[in-house]
Amino acid sequence: MRDSVYLDFNATTPLAGQVVEAMEPYLREAYGNPSSLHWAGLPARDAIETARSQVASLLCCDATEIVFTSGGSEANNQALKGIYFAKQSAVPAPHFIISQIEHPAIQEPCRFLQSLGAELTCVPVDSQGLVDPAEIQQAIRKNTVLISIMHANNEVGTIQPLEEIAAIAREYGILCHTDAAQSVGKIPVDVDTMNVDLLSVAGHKLYGPKGVGALFVREVINLEPLVHGAGHEAGRRAGTENILEIVGLGAACALAQQALENTETSELRDKFWQRLKSAFGEDVVLNGHPERRLPNTLNVSFPGRDGGDILARLPWLAASTGSACHAGSVEISPVLAAMGVPTSVGLGAVRFSLGRTTTQADIEQVLEGLIQITGNSTGH
Image (cartoon, rainbow, N blue to C red):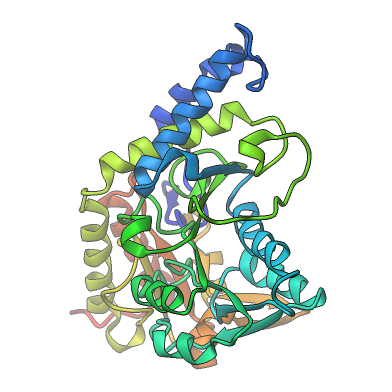
């Protein structure tokens, strides 16, 4: 019986031990309402503000610019819908610009806003998953209110030229948002260096709990709240705060800040790719940018094969495939399709995303399993 191997850290991460320790007291203590000004409420309020500062420190912004949400999807919805409803009275048919490889948490809110009268442009990407800033500039209209381009792609890991894109947005007086769910905690994220106005964070992508996230909102930005009610989060997001998970997110961000300079994961990822090339030669293809990508992400295709079948034959391995079954037919992922990856190649895609607990032994076991089930090795 083989050991289980987890190489799906882009899908979700386990709770870090330090995060669990930080959260545990809030299962029993600090039960007061953070909005209450008495002895029971103040410790809860202090815990939230400490977490807010920890998130802000990782993003290099002011703590007052952090709004806690229920996750990355809500943060994205808050950014997109908040801008639409704040601008619609002054800008007829507000225009949004996104890329063709955005996460559904961006695409679907945009489709909803289209049903309300918004206009949308989806700019293409090249064969490595990169957005050309010139395409962004060409797509700008007089009624463009927001450009939203993900920082790093969840499937292939390609990191976008956000500084250039944000500079273009600023030149035209347009707001810029980025879905940074995959990048925060893996690479340095400085909102001032990036020059973005809004940025989304998902707790469970950086060893924090599921069900919590944050939205960076630059101080001068006016957003219509997504959730209306009492004046929580400085009036930006109603609802009594989830103290337990907010504390967990803060602890995860503090831990991530300490781990940013660690290169072990990227070195292991690169060794994995070299071993795959040695074993499979031309029968394995890299998807995404060879350099401008997340340090933990390796998306490869085995042309002529089915990625889903490969993973099904390795039941001890947790990884993701680049295809999805819809109504009985198998299609390559929209991300790979947008990159122009041929169907015969895209169907054989597998995303291996490594994490802090990944070992050399894990990689060796996966390599051995892949060679065994494919019966394909160059012997190099």
